[in-house]
Image (cartoon, rainbow, N blue to C red):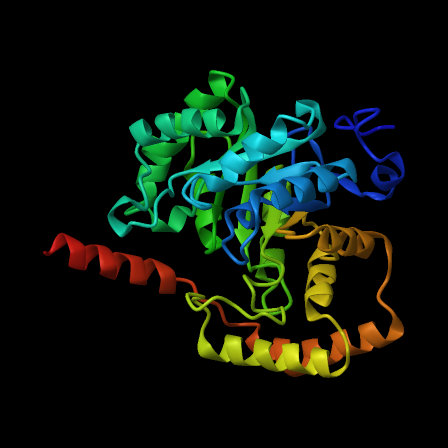
Length: 347
């Protein structure tokens, strides 16, 4: 079996054979087309018990998912801590894990720190929480929140290079919502960028990641696509109150959810299928709170939509999603953060 993360006696061979694997840029890693989002372990969208989360993750890896995405920000370290508990019974060679630096605590004044000193401490904290010696990818978390991108270029990325050189990480990535920032960093950085991760930019209401895929491919950069259901916009439970999307995006998505529900179609499954079919994307990352969801997601990889599902999907795209093509919420979260920070600093 030509999958370097396959472990005889641990994996479900039949499930692994059904999984699709793609090269992650020029890293040499072959990663599953579907990735595991560690944010779910921190109960960010739905309350999840630790033992249930561990069982779901273990099942996902046994069935061929070999890419795990996490961050200190997810539950103020909880996601990494739960992963550490899970990793005690999962062979290290069976998965690739990526974590992040730069975004940390809910407290606005302590939320972001892109300095070299904090970055160097962060990787050690993450490794300790997860109980491992190295991560496969270390990423700068949400680069748009830095006071200036020069901090990323002059402090954070050189620190990540030190971390890589020390053997605590194998590859370096950047993450964020505004896509043009990626090009800026890639063009100016003296540190080699191996991967980019964006969220809600490769989904039904916004596929703008596709405009950048040729550039990333030319540079040999792996492309990671997170939040295929738009951080809750494309599911029946709906988005959390803090969701930064503009009202028209929320309203159109609500209408799409209702339309699918009225036709006995799960819009979340259509949304994930849409993202999985985007050409050029290496891996789509989503959280799975239950074993049933893992199985449904895996099934989407190897099955086609029914005629009814395809017709509903086409209707949803034409009626509700196409009008949103030029819309996004770039700058909204950053401005909210900076306004809150300024008020606190003016006290």
